[in-house]
Length: 429
View 1: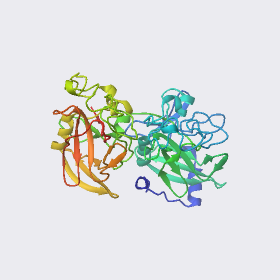
View 2: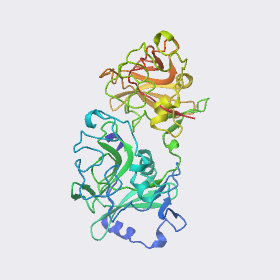
View 3: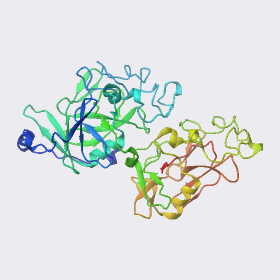
View 4: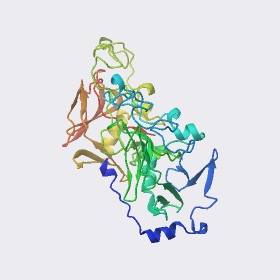
């Protein structure tokens, strides 16, 4: 993730900052008309492209602004022992887990975002308030200028000024909680995003602020970080890339489970929506233990229960189930349009082999070559890419149709075993 966190904020001189920060209210670009309320809590419109509205203060309960990720009340100690979604250690997660190595007794649920009942902003403030997703933090980060302000007592405040309308919000240097100890008070702050990091699901995404730097950064879930609530705008617009395709279909900027375009994300069997440590027909949802005992999406009576379904229903579409909000897996026709209507260029991003796919309008997406899972082995990592569509193979219902990538070419994949774990790049109407 370091490549996403390489923007540094220069510390202004103390004398200049103190003068600027204590200027009169008439100089403040946020007017009374800009500040509005939802459920009694103030927000400011920063003119962001998605329409997201940001709260002007941190979520606070009983005078405390610290929350473990996914918890809705402050507490006196923030450790894995006291964490609501672990059984006493980092390797015993009981919710929001994408890897059996982190889950209690191999537990995996595949949840990638905080559910409403675990969202401290929504639970405590109500209405449309919620913890921002990763992309909302990224949008704020990219569309604001950031300044570090030091008060006479030496404590810091971080000021974000919209590049779009000049409105501002401030973030106090509240610090963070680890165990019973407060860290960085007056000198820095850490804020949660609602987005789990699937590369290590003991961590969630967020923002780190200090006098030296302001970074998009992960945080360990049991720690006590702050929450700055949002009223979401058009969240689809934060992820959907319009390539100018004839169909009008928009493609996601990342794979399911990834927070950067070159990251692997999660792998799924065709027709399943939860990742797992082993991929074969012995644990495949839509069969009874073998490739000739298919229970759904079967066009051959010799291979199972013939129902002649050839396209995934919404209940079996990983993008629809994991992301919701109109996202789904691409059809074979949509994948073919991507292949034939775009310009494809192979390259690398920090050592990760990728194909950059540029649409007729000049916009592009990146498809990393992250391999496939069969049984318990990740095969062809950084050598080949395999991307599911929502359609069965036309020759045999034991297979699903998909895109095949290697550093030399891109083509339709042959023999994509339905039970294997492969990447999904979602689409939106």
